[in-house]
Image 1 (cartoon, rainbow, N blue to C red):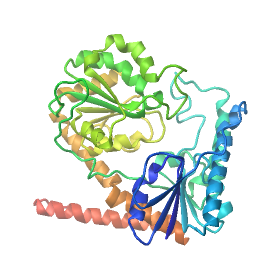
Image 2: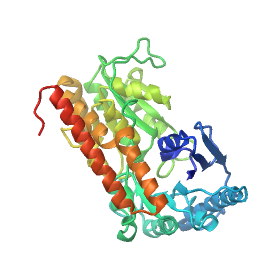
Image 3: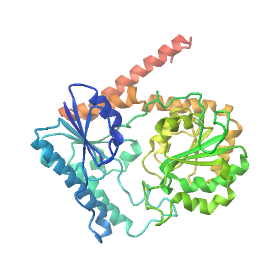
Image 4: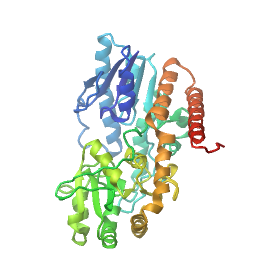
Length: 440
């Protein structure tokens, strides 16, 4: 089979799926992306550079739409070249959000397209206007309507769609929602697993272990959308209450979501300017971006992991933290509450409640043993709902196969889910029987 993936930041959400398909010698896997250093064995990477930038001074309502057309046209040219070389995919799998899948059907009208529909922008009820530091404006509804034109056009150019959480799917209008399956990309729970580790970090004489009070905070970039400002504003009180606690923060200084920091500064620097004088800098460690195995080890030894987010897409890092058995303290925002149940597999706090966040961290660090059940349940949640190999990847493969052969994706995915649930129940029953516990 010939598989064509499209995502401007290779491999994006498709890493594990592409690895699996490329491992089959009869498959040819081609991936169109913008240039980066990532590589996957067996995957042919074709990089493109957008044919031009957005027109200077273009109306701000259509900035994103024009960029999507430019990127879509750039991918169209790559696909045209592939077709001229004799390549025909059996299915195209791509992220729709940046316009890259818009014109694929113009090259291969008969080839099915499975598109990732990550987020439908709403003027109320999600990220826009959620935080007073970024108040909604009169321009937002028309701007978002034009931004959603990308979603609408990409949907009409796709045979089926998928997204990661039920809440993300719920944002789409009913016309679109009917052809979107909810499938998370999955977490490799064998990699993100509990373990006793020691980790050395720069400028600290001794390594950290689980015996230390370590509070972790992680985001791809340190920005308001992921609650960095709220965490920093809570830190003076956290560090005052916990004089032995070390705070480890991972993340870059760029912007992934929302408006960037003012020119010449970063959100990290802005927050240090605001609260830095109240912090014990010797116990505050900004590590930037670290290798994935270092990130996992830091989660393993973390006493408490803080995850804050606007109502927006769910980060893999929260699920990976839960999978390692972290005690996760998370904002009570969608789609976090779709996964975390307060007091069962994590602790929830209002996004804006700094005192509540301090109280949660204080309680965890004061009573670590009392929280072990919550840690165990966090791990169990991810294993049972998001495990890559036993849950997520089989569902993805079933969806890809259904779209490729023209079967009903909903029926096929339901059948696979039923089979997975039954297999999981048999595994649990066998484990209970081995332990002498009667299964229900």
